[in-house]
Image (cartoon, rainbow, N blue to C red; front, side, top):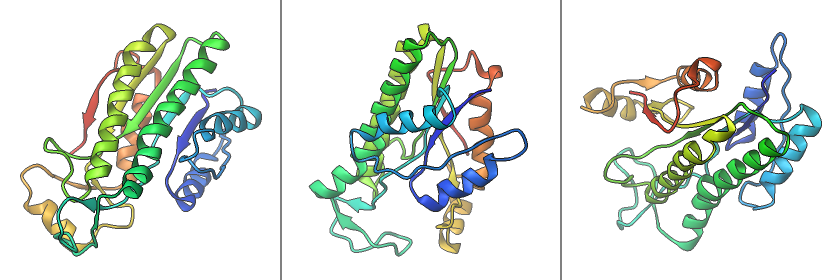
Length: 223
């Protein structure tokens, strides 16, 4: 049996995942913690091992998302309020998306080696574009850092049997997508779909399967 640790940004998201994953033959536990605390990754693995056993799969899905910008504009093109980049917005985003992701990967790797395991999976989720992430600049920068950590892990942890990949989802309707956003996607030359979270999850399931043994060190863009 493979054991998965998944981080989520909001307790309702975690509870929804918990209910779905606790299907026939499966067990799941939800645990709320502050990923901005550098001691949390160790605590999360301690709790997971106590309740379920050693962790084989890590999915870094949580985000400290905050919409900040270098421009003085009060709102973005969809009418969502913007705030200026500050030390607080930077810290909120980087402490979760970058720091916590790195510490979780490190914690998994050390425990993996200590128990002599030979199979593992790491999947990160990213966002942004080639020219950063205008309108969500700290989010884009923190996700870029997480991507770099994950790709480094693909190289460094390969001898331990751990693969590591990053999924770049399309616009995904987790409750925030408005008609204006759908119109934007429909008129875009680079965005093709508004996805359901279940569609993105199918790719993650594949990456954490035995069939994906040769898939590592990739950023997989879903459109």
